[in-house]
Length: 329
Ligand code: ATP
Ligand code: LTN
Image (cartoon, rainbow, N blue to C red; front, top):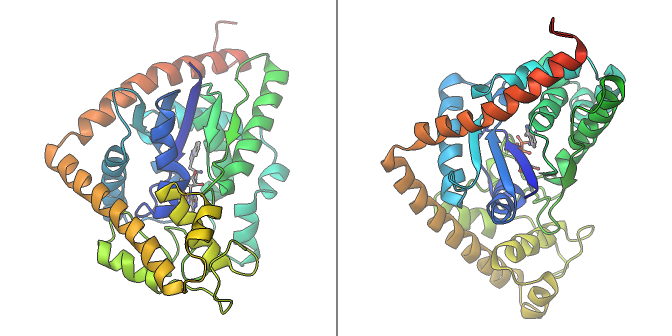
């Protein structure tokens, strides 16, 4: 069975973008792959987090993972900081990554161009920790949204370099980008990604939003003056985004939706999108409440970390031997 790995950074409440672009895909993948899914809590520290809020986000994230259908019996689910080998391999890999490579990372360049003054060094080297998260488990595939593809490409480059220098150590992973929904856009500014770290709350649907709040957000989503429901991301970014959301949730293809809403105004179409979103949120939230009431989260995380440590510690040991960090050469 091929192995697949991915992580979610719990730097805020999970969004509809995370669900469509990532979580929903993971649940499907566990049918056919050995899935390793972790909560990248160390990655959140690259920007300041309020400790209480972070802790709550971690709890909600893991509960929502389970509510979405990730099954701890089939998949390895754990918290990144519970497996210490990630951080240790992260440092080793940062010593095999050039600053020129990190300077080319889009997320870094974006922050730099915005004149961000409080950029931490952790943020700068974060792609090398991500490379460690991946390479330490030898996965075949890494499913990520479009925005993370560049990081998986860097991971491949670093792995190839390391293998050439020190001998075969890591499997070279392939990024997997979902076709529909790899980039759900903000409802208030459809030229930007729907993002949980975005301040504009209106543009983002959180999985724990009250259904009626989510409905309002969809109904007030930015559209255009064209007045025709059609897929044209350049000229009708808002409507195209809503089509993507509807299609991802209802599984009706975009061309079929366009036919279905031909000659109808945006109001009717938005209502249909809102119905799909409300259906999803109501279902997820009732499962989430049940999971919280069962008090199983710690047990799930500990048993996941136990499985993960066995794989990660073995890989770290091999790497340490290869680079001469041990005295048994
Ligand atoms: P941030 O919103 O803080 O920039 P993020 O949501 O991109 O962070 P993660 O939570 O780590 O970061 O993302 C988890 C997965 O969800 C990643 O694979 C990411 O690409 C995907 N994802 C996040 N936002 C969207 C979106 N708007 N559309 C599709 N996929 C998304
Ligand atoms: N960097 C990712 C989260 C992440 C991840 C990973 C994804 C951390 N480690 C390993 C896939 C594989 C993000 O910000 N979305």
